[in-house]
Amino acid sequence: MDLRERIFSISNENDFEQIALKVFDYQKENCPIYREYVNSLNWPAPKTLKEIPFLPISFFKSHRVCKEGLDPAIVFKSSGTTGQIRSQHFVEDQQLYKDSFFRAYTSLIGSPENQVILALLPNYIEQGESSLVYMVDHLVAATNNPLSGFLLNSPSEIELRYQQAIESGKEVVLFGVSYALLDLAEKNVNLSKARIIETGGMKGRRKELTKVELHQQLQEGLHVPFVSSEYGMTELLSQGYSNANGLFETPPWMKIRIREVNDPFHYLEDGKTGGINVIDLANLYSCSFIATQDLGRIVGSGFEIMGRFDQSDLRGCNLMVG
Image 1: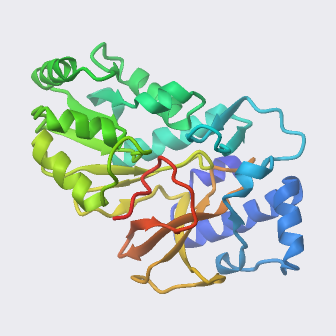
Image 2: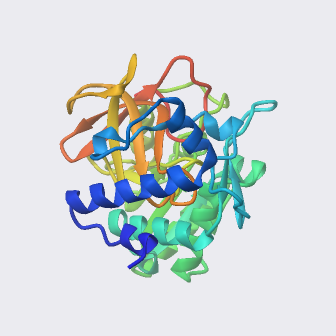
């Protein structure tokens, strides 16, 4: 079984650690920027998961973080305001991304074949080159249902498709950027049986809200018992999703570690707030070990997003203080 196949066959902690160490060796050898970074630290060869160094996520704005000689099949770019430098993710194998997001979504949300999936993601569509739009577009196609699709600000159309989907016995999932979902909630559209998945992203279009405030307004305006969030970003090929208790879960090939804010090589105990490090083993031809600019904490078998570092620039991927 090759390394790529092993990533999606992980079944326990030992599996994860052994494959992560092999991915580290592969990326240190084949990704010039990661190799240069590791060597600059005079880092000894890691023997455990805790000893693997994490690349600061800002490198995706300033460097080409990928396998040497990679000819990308697709390039994803982060959302950003005018003049802002956008992160770039050079993806060698689109099928690897599809395998990752389909498996994660099916495991954590449900099977698209049983669903109608609606999407309110106007700013991502406008800017283009979005990994989120790419993912949702393929999930929409997988429903094989004419009611599924991307919609702009049309509350009546959303409500109509929702009602028709429910009447036909389908589950309804609505992906939406935060400000578009708030616009919808203010029109008091009853989507009480839908699964709402907000993807962050006020981006100056509305007053910033804590995640608790945002979800409370969405629950009231859309008449839903809870709101889910998606934790993903341009630099990753995997996503986590939050459930009714607000905690994010991840697929078996993705893990979160919490680092001390002032000492990036020291890890915190569960329950303590610090910087989020992400291990995404699906990022095989890029870098799987990324130190993000998000703040969070591990709670039980899940994790919470607490906000961003003050010096971080705003970006639309669920990074509001909450």
